[in-house]
Amino acid sequence: LALRASKARQLEQSEAPELFRDIEEIAGRAGVPMPTVHLIPSEQPNAFATGRSPRHSAVAVTEGLLKYLPRDQVRGVLAHEMAHIANRDILVMTIAAMIGAAISAIANILQFSMLFGGDDRDNPLGAIGAIVAIIVAPIAAMILQLAVSRQREYLADATAAQYLGEARPLAEALGTLQRGTDALPMNVNPATEALYIANPLSKRGFAALFSTHPPMEERIRRLRALDAAHGIHYG
Image (tube, rainbow, N blue to C red; front, side, top):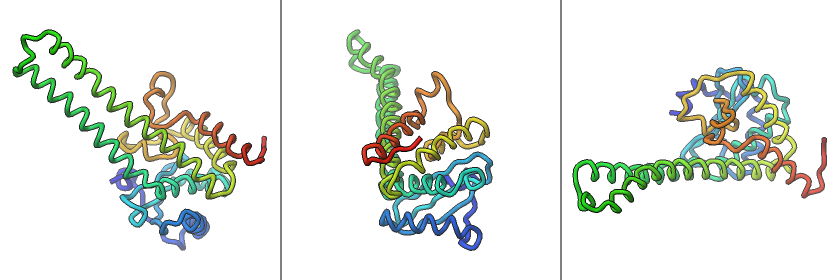
């Protein structure tokens, strides 16, 4: 569904041999099977991985990613996506979404019980508790999903640095991706935005608080700190 929503088409190795070589090499380091490779018709540099397991996975990259990023930065992005596959992040995010849905369902049940009767109708404290739960539960569900999504992004960044032996290529790629998402809009289904390495729907100010992605500046800072901890310094 994610691939279809992004209008991605599957690539053959003969169409992008360099891309396939890089993915195959990183997959070997990650210890996962080679995923299928797909191309998204968009000028915005971006990418995502999907699939229910490492054996049934796919990596999709945009035309802009291959066009505007040098190869070492593309490898950084690919390593991040392979990390998502190896860490089974699609499964983790699905479970988080299910828990969030369950919390919201509880709020709906409480709302219906207040509307159509129940033991708390003559108990003002019980009614207040139900109202608080109805308001707080959806917020709690959203915060849970945002927290899980952001932590998995940080983990994928760190795992990618391990695959590459340094964090620099991904750190530089994230900076390029941030500039690209700001300059080149991309029409995506909001339900799939969390899959992308960089949020394709640029969010600023108050809206950024509810982004599924951690702040790009913080991701870059953490990656640079990883290199610094291993004695790798760069400008």
